[in-house]
Length: 426
Image (cartoon, rainbow, N blue to C red; front, side, top):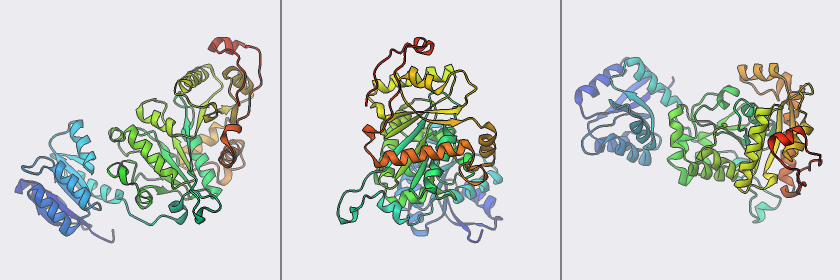
């Protein structure tokens, strides 16, 4: 590293501070610039020295590590805090992360563990950069500069009630396809515990949605721009938390506020979700302009999709909000897309043909198949066309954009799912 990582050590025990200092003293890229024995001293020294990393003991008399971390996060936001504690309970971890900590070291820790944490958190620190003009102004209609209100971007959520349906593959490639068409697009990994977007796009998780939570009430474009990562296609990506337990830090209200702010910046906000329907997932679906409901040509998938449509009715979602996407489609399968549309009484918006070899190789190597040597394959062309449909949807009145299904007599599938024939609604 060209610059040294400047570290402040905070612990009420002098011998502990000295031991930590000794563990760092032979690292050429790390410099201990100050030590503090109390939380109040830590706050003052942080303001004075503006360290890169603060190693903060959690249990101290007076102002404890949690309170000191909260104060430092407000006054010196560039300082990244690593909590040190003999307590390993989940509540301590949650409180520490909510206070602004970026990592947690369990005492006693080794020199390798300490050095690794310092370097990792330093590399993960948000770097504030000025966002592009298109990100600052969001999506504008002609004449917006003359005072007309900005048009909010579309939130498109890719969801399946059954795991393994291929939502991440669809979301990632769809988002890249939109970005390559020069539409400002951000991909949000809404699968907070075990998101795969970073792996799918071969990107490092340096910052994540958690870095926005402590300032959720003040989400300015420059802050968001410092946290989203940039894929080589030009796509912006907001990663899931780096550790599963950190997902609990993101609430449904956080996600709702976040999506509302992203709409002001980007033309398209593509959200990948898990199959679990918790409070956060429901808030994502509620906030979406479009839900791409992914299914496959088999009975378990269709049964779950049928149940989701029942839930959508309960949640008072308009019919036009939910679009059906058949993934891994094949003419060799007994259940045809027409059977699906007739049974569920919903139009099939897109059919993504089966190509496990291309999809799996792209996922393993971390590249989207809508670009490069695979872009002419049917699986890639299907998702590019899906992007074109979404672009057109955003330029027209959504209420009249859906295709209608063809009325059919009750089939075996219809009887199996218990759905009665009903006329198409426009």
